Image 1: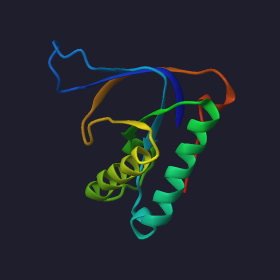
Image 2: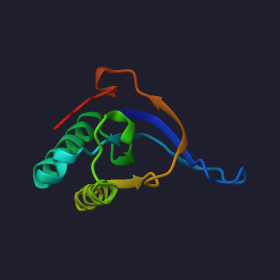
Image 3: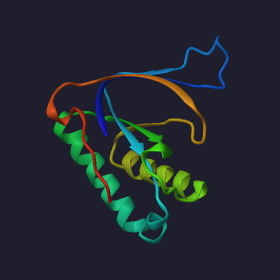
Length: 127
């Protein structure tokens, strides 16, 4: 997870006329789902939401960006599972009044980010 001052992304398949999406202060969550997560779905979901909320509260951020980033590990969960997990995390965070953006799933994206400097600017969690 990253506490960002700004985040911009654009799907690689976009035309040059597409300006992309620019988001001000936010928490960017890169998500890598593994096969074991499919057997522990409820635990993984609970821990993800808890940790995202914890960091957002610590840095007073209300906007969360969820980004599937399958390059974080060797083993990957079924893509349908991974996408459904991201959507469920989104739904749970929305019910807690967070503003949510989901980077398009299964696409390569161009992106720029400005990571905040304090120690909580970069937080790694693995379940």
